[in-house]
Each structure stands twice: as C-alpha cells, then as structure tokens.
Length: 382
Image (cartoon, one colour):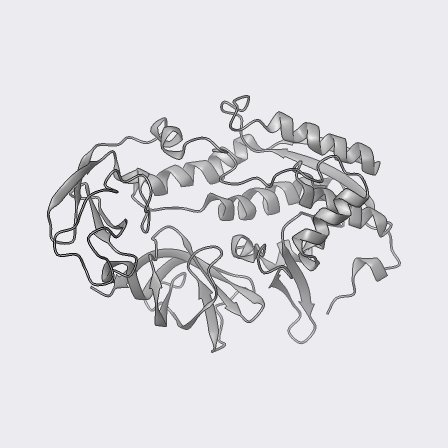
C-alpha cells in the first residue's frame, strides 16, 4: 500500500475541490494539518437560472469562502459551466429523450471533477487533487495499479459514482474523508469551528437542486401524453410523457387509489403501482401492482460503454455488482460481450429489482471497485 501523505517527508501542493459542504471542508483541514500547501477551488458547473431558490451556487461559494478563511487557505472560483453543458448535460438530455434514466453525477465525476478540474489543478502546479468523496485510493505493489476502494462508512460509500475513473486520474487523487465515518467528519468540523459544520448535505442532481424534477425537464425535453396500461393490456390512466418516468417509480403516477382486477400474487388489490416498462414506439407506460411483480425482477442484464479502472475487464470470479446506488453488492457472473469490446453481461443467481436502462452496473471484488458500464437492457422474469 502507498504510504500516506501524512508520513511523506515532502510537503505537497494539493488542490481541494471546495463545494461549500462539510465533507470537502474537512478534507482541506486534514490535508493542511498534515503540513501540505492547500489551495481551494470552487467549481461553478451550472449557470442557467443559477440565482433561483433551487440552484444557487453563489450561496455555496460564500460557504466555501468562509471555510477557506477559517482554515487560512486561498480559494479560487473557476467556471466549468460550458464544459459541463457540453460533456454532461447534453448527454443527460439525450438519454432522457431516448427513454432511459441516466446518472449525470457519474459523468460529472469522469468529465468535470476528475478531468477539467484535474487539468486546471495541474496547471497550478498541483501534486494531487482532493475531494470530499467517501472512497479510498490504494496502490497495489503486486500489480503496479491504483485501486479504488469503498469508503469506510458503508452508509456513505460513493465508489459507485467514481467507477469511471482511470489509472491516471486515481494516481493524482486523494479522498481523505474516505477513511472516516460521516459522524466523525461532522465532529471534526464542529470541533474546529467550521461555519458549515451542521450544513445539510446536498441531495439530487446539482443542476436541478431541490426543484420539482418534472418541471425542470419540461423546459428541455419534448413530451407527449399517452396511455398507462397494466399487465393485462388495459388502459387505466394517461401519462404526461415517458421521459418523466423511471422503472421502479412508485410516486407521481396518479393511480394510487386504483384497484386492480385479479391482482398479481404478492400484490393485492390495494398494493402500490410501479412503473415496469416504457414503450417508446407506442408511447405507452406499463405499470404493475406489487413490489415483487415478475416484470420488476431480472436475472440478467447487458451493459455498454464499459470503463475499467485497471484498464481491462476483470478476470476474477466471485464478483458482486450494484445496479443502483445504495444497493448491497449482489453476487453475479460476469462475461465480456462478444458483440462489442466495450460491453458485458451479468447473470445474477438472485433476481434484481427494477434494473433500469441508463443507470450503471458497477462491479466489485470485495472492497475494490473494478469499474462498470451503462445498463442497456435486461431480461425480466415474465
């Protein structure tokens, strides 16, 4: 394992992505305490209606600047909004328009935080960059490779969002709070008097913030109402546009009080409804009743656009996979696709719930994140 920076005799120049949140603030504090030269960078990634109540980066910058003042470090405000719109937001809209459910945070990490930001930091003479992600980096002397590990706090682990990072990116990256639990991060922030010690964690996608998701998408994506059908082919309601729904969705369907006729086993006539399929050709939204409905269960999936941290697909057996964030690793069998070098297939002994095209399937060998790909399709149980 690579020696920690704390034990390194050489003072390093480390550029920290200061977001205004407590995790990046404590990251900067820990590195400065180790004696390194720390510079804060605030990344502005969104400009459209940025002064609104939902997505006001100026407030986050004020918090980040206050942290920098307390820690006695410089902070620079850098605008990556054009890069973000071209590399992340455009892809986000393409995926939603195609009926898939993308994860822009994963693309943002690969294209902005660990590419545009890293390039900027290197121009400033940085030895490393650091962020407040709950993950860890380890150098494996046996292979000569850098490994991405899960964060020590299982409730906060963010390796899923970082699985597209490369060897070159990991070699220059530090995740100091990945060694800690969130409660300890909060305790440190409070102990040293950071102004954002009790700041609420941000949720949702950065350019959407806390605003209603449907109202935001309405501004960018064409949509047409269509039928909502149950698993018997009966039209039971109307949807407002397929792009606004995702597989497994339970809320916002407008059919909560509807009784089922001959309800599926495991459901019951008052069981909740879930989005199970989206047919773009006929503009039809298919819903089923009951969490365990066969249409929501999958044993296999195919993924494309694979990215492997080691630079090549894994050869190890006994792997686990996540098909969504916060899911426990599910045992799986991995096979590289014969159709494309950038694809793979997964087979699960235990059925997986609401596997969603556009989301990422991420593979793990114990605590080591191996990489993953974008889910293209899956085979349901019915």
